[in-house]
Length: 62
Image (cartoon, rainbow, N blue to C red; front, side):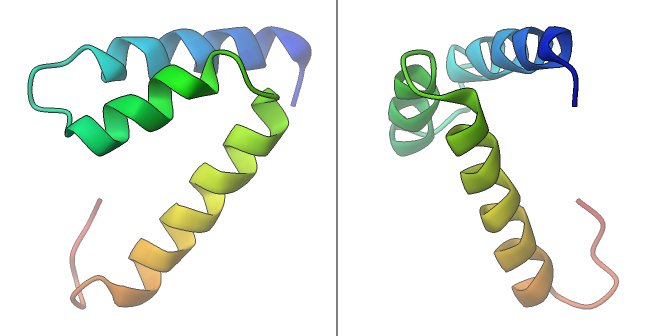
């Protein structure tokens, strides 16, 4: 992943954080991600995505 992509991802996370349907817990995570190492944030998001994929009902598309 290139450095420019990290900035784009950070902006998308910031937009998601202010959406009215984003939970308070997710907002807190996303807001804190702005001051954290983006690689750590991406690793956490990847891990959560894998967990959701493993436990999602069969045939469900995210």
